[in-house]
Image (cartoon, rainbow, N blue to C red; front, top):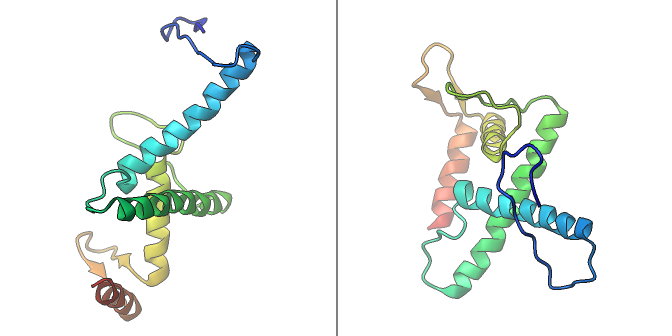
Length: 146
């Protein structure tokens, strides 16, 4: 496989089933690439494969939960996109044209924090008002986790 513009090196895509046409082999590669990106984003932003448990059984339980969290964030972000409430966060050194998972995660967190009453005051950026309901939710989560 060669890039006609010459931006990328030539690449060989191999398949164990020789009867598959080249177009189908490329389609398989594209599908696998989407899975690879999902795993990379889940590793980077959700800590998948960096769990600190000692038991293989615990790790086997945690990984599907983290992938489920990835899916949940993606679904919630999709709902925010349809409402026009998912901005593309920009960095000072480059312009992004496409949303990333970190944008989706930040928007979902912000939306959830607003929903439970956490808000940043307009007059002082370093202070945060916490509603009684949010404080009770955080207290209950901390007590139940122990």
